[in-house]
Length: 121
Image (cartoon, rainbow, N blue to C red; front, side, top):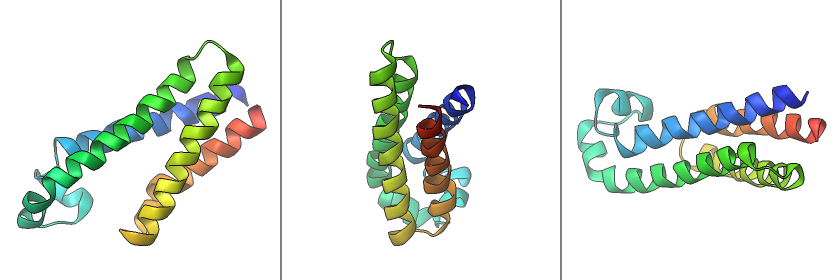
């Protein structure tokens, strides 16, 4: 179960690196427009805000990677719980306020990873 939990945490970290790239660098490109369902004008008007969001997602990814690399298992466990909990809360808030698909794309996978970490812990 520990291996599965580690893989799930790594996947959530990778997902947030991808979100960082989308929001910071691809926001006004066809890929960014499609991912977020925006017009070019909307994307242009919001690109600074999106870059800020992307940076926050990068911090979540960095925390999750830190949790995977920390040499102290107890600290690593606590880091996983904290950062996965943050992702779940961010996903719930985003799903409630921005787009329902965020529940499935962000909150649900993080919740599954959180449960796996708790079971493996």
